[in-house]
Every structure is written in C-alpha cells, then in structure tokens.
Image (cartoon, rainbow, N blue to C red):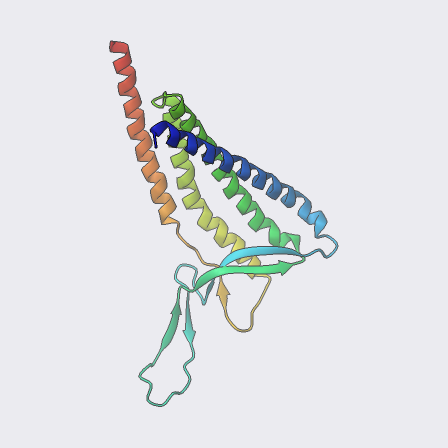
Length: 212
C-alpha cells in the first residue's frame, strides 16, 4: 500500500471519528441540559463512577475475615486494589450531573485533539507537512493529552466521592479511588518532545528554502 493511500485512509478514519464524536458530544450536551427536566417527576437515569473495594483512595485495601479451617496455614487475607465501575439507577439528576459534565469535558478535549490531527493529516495529503502551523498543532495536542492525564483523575475521584456520599452498601465498603493516569501524562510529554523536534525541523526547512 502506498503512503498516499495510507494517508487517505487515515484522513477518512479521523473524519469519521471526528463527526461521530461531534454527534456524541451534541447528544451528551443535550442530555445535560434536559436531564433536570426529564428526571424532575421521578424519571430514572443511569450513573456510572469508578470505585474500589476497601478503604484508601491511593491504595484501596480490605481485610477479609477468615473462617476457622483446621490445618490451614493462612493467618491473614487482604484484598488489594480491587477496582471497577459502579453503575446505579437513580431518580436524582444531581447524581448524574457531575459525571456527565466530566464526560462532556473529556469528550470535548478528545474532539479537539481529533480536529488537530485532521489538520495535520490534511497537510500531509497536500504534501506540505513541515509548517509552523503543524508544529503548533502537535504542541497543542501534547498539552491537551497531558492536561487530560492530570485532570481526569481529579474529576473521576470527585464525581465518585460525590455519588458514594448518597448511597451505602451492606456487603462491601466502597471508596472513590484516585488513579494516576501516568500513561496519558507520558504520552503527552512524548508528543511535546515530538513537537519540539518538529518545530526545529520546520526552522531548518525554512532556512533551506531561503538559501535556495
């Protein structure tokens, strides 16, 4: 497959993802706006938040009670870092509001990244990728990804904590976990390094064009 065909296919995928993401963003925005009215008279909605079993936001643990088993060498059992997603049906639009706004913010940033990538792909198709505009686009992508890596854990923790304040469970103790998104931060930093290298390449290309 030629490079032009790969670039064209990438452009089509980015276009499709961008427009589908735009539809999702519009639908979620509409729901955030109308949910207080739709659920005002006892309507039911879903809410999902990250949770962990036990206690401790950074390293959740839960002591397990051992049955008296003759001959067993086990003296203690501790459940470590058992995490998952808690889904609830609720009649309160307030419980839905914070998670939906957090999702709206994440989707909006993701859509912005897709839009910037579309611009880069379009410049590659037109055979003019080494421009200062693309250097700024790549730098902005890096900043957005790094920002997501820093902001998402705080949003997830705050929304989960707000929801768990309103509900109690008899069988297990659940806590709002704080999960560091190191992979997003690392990816964002790598993209920022790439943008710096790309910007240096643009300067070299411009200097070469002036000397010709």
